[in-house]
Length: 395
Ligand SMILES: *[C@@H]1O[C@H](CO)[C@@H](O)[C@H](O)[C@H]1NC(C)=O
Ligand SMILES: *[C@@H]1O[C@H](CO)[C@@H](O)[C@H](O)[C@H]1NC(C)=O
Ligand SMILES: [Cu+2]
Image (cartoon, rainbow, N blue to C red; front, side, top):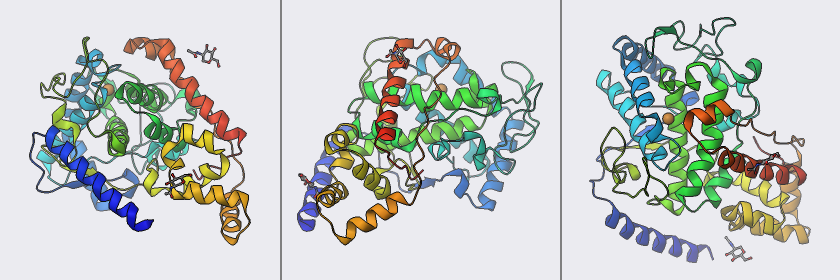
């Protein structure tokens, strides 16, 4: 069985390669660099990033990117340009960083890891990007952008204003993100599932500059969008490499040949990491990556009835782990004892409901409120199912 599944994977790869050649009109990269999770940077890597960010601020690049994002705001949100545009945009930032020092590589923030209590993330401390703005004027006085003055859209101190009175409500769990990655089959589903959940909640709950159309004033913007881009790439690798459908900016349907706002380059040109200018990959990280997270698979498979598992986590349901767990449920053996010991060693800690998007932020984007609430409600339904099943999250 092992051998035949190896053969099957080889066949699948061969078929995918044909598809790639048919869609790809750009050369493969001769070398590929790796975007890492911010907390895994070495101190010399982080020092390099810090010095480049300071130089970019001095030379007006924060202002330029905040301006660009704000200027094109209506075209790059609420439609299928969301992922391609922001991939290209973060790449542009990284490209400018590399003009200062070729060692600049845009890190990402694995925000889902911090979903329960975002304010206690190590990322939001003085060692890294700093925390909430101080009371009163909301100016940020610690971290990599401490005491910066921003100039777009006017002169103001760099600010954050954490939601829920400084203690931001929960974000979205790895399980919820995993559900999107496994279940969604079209960009028409995947884009709102991410844009109206994790994407919005982080912007809103960091607040201050991050709340606004000029959110690139906060370097968290780049960490956040690099992470969302990584999630898109995981979905793409899950059988949706070239999937692009749904509304385009300004009406009509998007296609791989649609032009990205501002950049005037085809969507096709950013679809495949490792080709054209997209010469990067993401460091392996277990969170939200099914193939590297057998622990989550095992816990999901143990907690949920098979039909429920297949509905919400179709990929997990197909794994050997799901089969083993299923068999074990009906028969006693030493393996199940081990499995349940692992699963039960963590006390049951229900997954909290994530914050909803605020009306003002929905309006600012021109989102359809009912669409947003539908996505939020669907995510809460999954949380209800998991909590009712006493699912114990490893996170
Ligand atoms: C799991 O079981 C199903 C049938 O119940 C089968 O189709 C599938 O191939 C099995 N998966 C693995 C990885 O063994
Ligand atoms: C979402 O859920 C809330 C309360 O749980 C409900 O009032 C609202 O009508 C729902 N909205 C949609 C669009 O499903
Ligand atoms: Cu944006």
